[in-house]
Length: 255
Image (tube, rainbow, N blue to C red; front, side, top):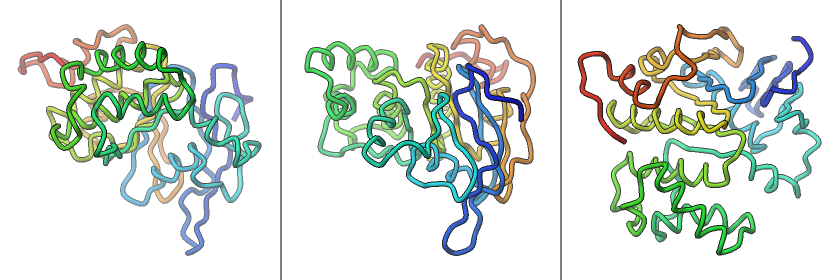
């Protein structure tokens, strides 16, 4: 692989992760993701997708190899520095991980509170991200009063409220119906258009094929495919994007 460019946000070089059971989560994985890219990470269960995500948030350490995020070697980040590092990485999970006893507003605000933002900053930022994610009318609701799609939007709003340069989404549509999945992908695309690099781990091959973004495929911890999956317009609007996902015969809907 050539030297990393200034636009590279994620770089894996010869990364191996061997678990205590002797199973390899990753095996000499090498790839990079550039700034403002929207990339899918695909593969069957056990292929290594979750291992990549957990390595990127330093929940795991590699057995060998080098991982850099925005040019910084993750091995150089101490345990004390991990919370600060994670402020620059938004993470969206399949199971939402919302605080059940807090409202939508408070779930999103919490991400700013733990990173030391003032009340004034929180009051300014949270309504903006709730508008972006289509949750303005739900700010006083609790998670158990929301649909699965709405809960995932809250999770995305919380991950994005700090406007991180990198957003990781681990199976963000895994528990959602096809129509709701399109809305979630449309929202992630909208966030990507603001300048945030997006890496999505997914097993939904139909959705990935429709998205026509770059695809990294893993099998038994190895990168077996890395390609731009089809042609698309980089300046495609979110409405055009959603209509393409739904197909030519389905009416457009609003988020």
